[in-house]
Image (cartoon, rainbow, N blue to C red; front, side, top):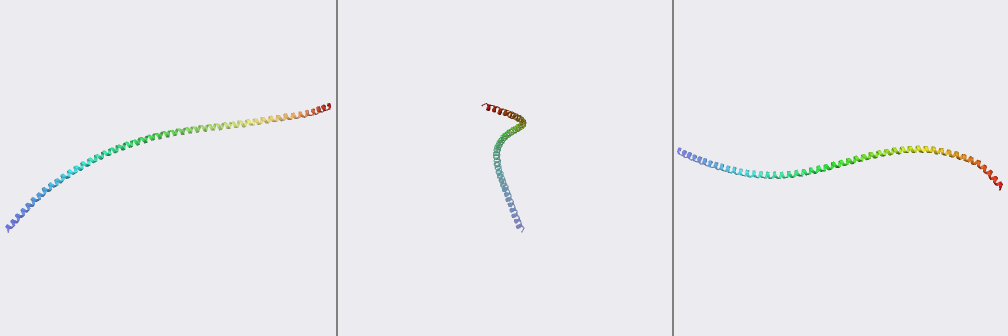
Length: 174
């Protein structure tokens, strides 16, 4: 039985050795396979990394172009806005100047109207005073004329009496 056990032991040792060899072979193959996969993955990573870098650089260039164009557009819009603001400022200044002129004209017109009003009032007062004086003068003249007329009527009455005497004399002559 010892022999059978020894044979079995030897067989088990051979089987174990062959399993160790197979395991070593599998390890070597796995290491080789893992190395190949690692190498392939590194190549893929480098390719993808290169593609990504290239894509990034192309996108970066596109972005730079877009930013440059947008910057020019913004500068153009800003320039147009500045120009339109300058134009608006000029228009506001012109309008303010015109308003000031109109206010000055209005003030001048108001002053002239006030002067005219004062002159008219003064002339009206003078005319009233002159009319009052003329009325008094005319009343005085009318009184004097009335006196003269009364005097003339009196004289005419006397001369009427004389005329009737003369006419009687003339009538008696004829």
